[in-house]
Image 1 (cartoon, helix red, strand yellow):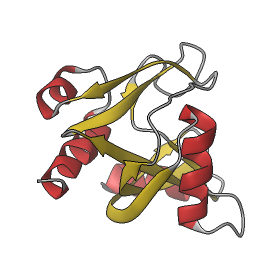
Image 2 (cartoon, rainbow, N blue to C red):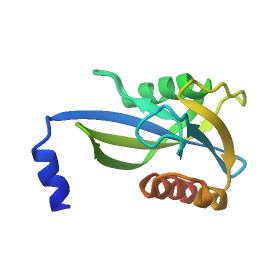
Image 3 (cartoon, one colour):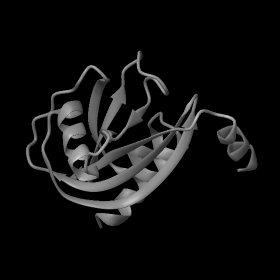
Length: 144
């Protein structure tokens, strides 16, 4: 942790805030696979979401991000987790929400190459960072 703090102290002070949606249906979560041209973590699986624009409400940002990434409208936004990480010159802080879909039609943006509805066991096997896996697995505890 001390190394991270020292690294952050020497970096330009750029912070971004984002939101992610644990969208569940039939005890499965909607997962999207990052395209091979997206950094960081190309070809990793994640849950949809996006950055919060300056002055934007976090829940509005989440609805917009999900609509842009998967073409879906969502409801019942309940925050359940946060985490932060540093990558290059950016310190990213994310808020994760439990959500339900208002429609079933999915249309992926160019940022993602595929999607799937995954069970808890399937999430354990998909390629992703351990931090995001932990957040997604935690989401399953809230939908019991």
